Image 1: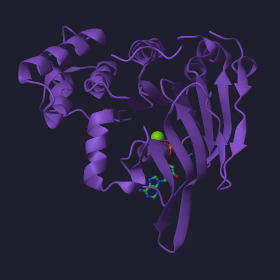
Image 2: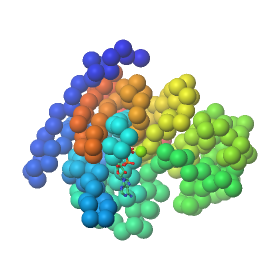
Image 3: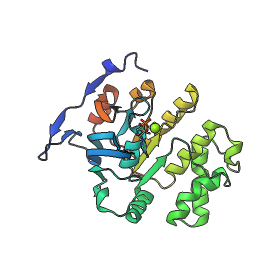
Length: 275
Ligand code: ADP
Ligand code: MG
């Protein structure tokens, strides 16, 4: 662990594109998995217009592990929803693995999410009437991509991976908060997503359990080359990721690469293998 995250970080340089948008630059040797340009989200509240995200732009490289931090109400969950295609912006664009989400209708966006995106919700959102194993299998059943026996085997393997091999037949209410969170993580990974979004997955956990969740994310990021975007309010956990984007009042106020990660990016084979 680093004593001072700020001293261990380097600012990401920005470039201004032809359309005048400032975009942090990805290392040129790595593909872009996610590009946000001028993302703005407004809500109408009575006669008032509330701007919760204003002109947010950045790029995230394939295989990166990025954290998004900021105070409560700064727009982190809203941003994650837009990046994952769960919600649509008032203005601006999101390009996910080369596809402009704005060009897709809701049905096509849902299909794309099923194929490429994993999402861990702040509130877990497990189905209470299904066991841990059945919850993890749900995304596989929705896409119908595997025969039932293989789907069960994969779900069982992932539950073992998150340390819940002996809890497969427990219902959510029979599991602790940390265990439910790990089921949600296994479910998000079961379709082998290209990109995983996790909204404060350590929020309700004690320090040690939170640490284990981040270690697990690190392993899955490195082993599978899965791009991970993690929202957290914990600066120490954020400093363990490769890069931190800081929001305040719906605006990006800081975007830094952490030195330990920039060294890894420069390694000849730093991207990790896809499985
Ligand atoms: P964070 O995740 O950083 O705590 P959110 O993205 O949840 O922040 O919310 C950012 C702001 O947007 C908050 O002020 C919140 O009240 C407002 N907000 C979120 N969703 C809605 C909505 N559906 N209608 C109106 N305001 C909203
Ligand atoms: Mg939130």
